[in-house]
Length: 107
Ligand SMILES: [Zn+2]
Image 1 (cartoon, rainbow, N blue to C red):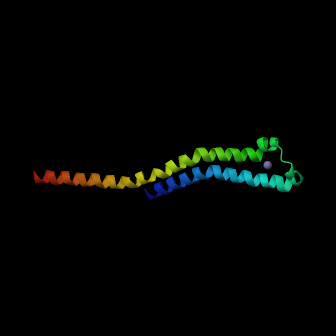
Image 2: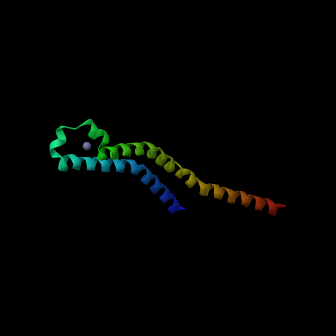
Image 3: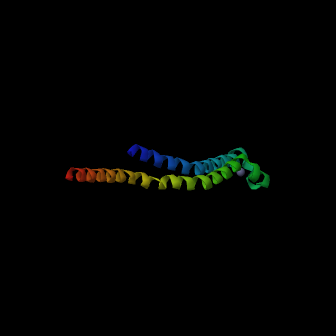
């Protein structure tokens, strides 16, 4: 049960980190591209580069993934308290069964 709970939290974290990680990779790639490979072009950023540059596309994809995945991650994380509440239901059922047995014995 504890392992299932941990994997659920881990899954939520992984889903939530997917977009931001892609964005961060895009930023690093773009910084490398502008800072290392095209040092002279830093002052002349064209609209074409911003729209069609692979690093910028990666950042845009990361942003879109964040917008899609973070609400999903929050939903996955929010499902955990229900899972934690389940053992209480089971013990509640056991209590009910015990009461029924007591009622049975009283007959
Ligand atoms: Zn760029």
